[in-house]
Image (cartoon, rainbow, N blue to C red; front, side, top):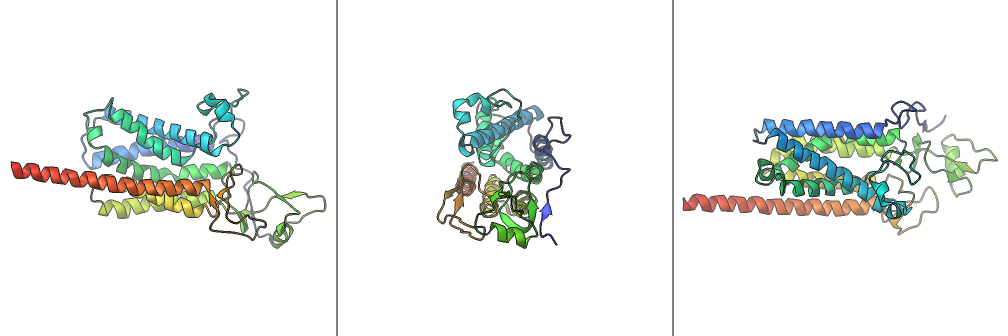
Length: 328
């Protein structure tokens, strides 16, 4: 009996084949809508006095910053073809170098986090200066972390629909149609294929093997699990504004770092730290580190710094208010 699952043949990147509307683009639209509605819901629930037009300006800057940051990180860090350095306009255009429509392929969430902070900071210190958006900026970052994590899984479901970001070889896994095939002469490949019930014919030079659906595992832990921790636990113990956002950054980075061990390294990058070169399917090392893990460690450190800095800001506000009350 076969010990693997075939990727569903009815699932495609496009919602309707032949029409350039993809599950990936729809996931972004829905995540933006969920975040917009959920952040505004939290503002109203906590009775924060922010004008709707100021909020919409803030959200526009946040979304634009996240998209630009994610796109820049994906094209300039993960892509090693060099095409975006020689044709930088392609970073912001949905075409290839021959002007064929491709859509925006590739977003890196680590860059998205950075852009989602830098762009709103620029806006609130220029167009929204001296408004309540500026006053409650740290509180808004907390609202945003909760809102974004609640819809994050949609992006990973879209990755699954694209049959991309798949994991490493495992018995009982899914055979992704776009996965990099293995040379049948590689040590352990024929034995593994036989163990899961895949027949290798004499003329087969390459074979596709079942893999871990790592994008679904990532979506579950970085989405619903993180959201529930933020909403039901950390929101209750929050002592100062900014704490939730910093905690979210650290939670995301923590889950991403360890789930990366299940995920196949990016084909063009491989392992950035290749302590033990992998020569067969059975070999594995916790000391082999991918780019995603390095960026996750940097993100985890950033989250910790954010928590320390915002705690300092909160303490200074308390001290200032205490001194002011004492003088009065």
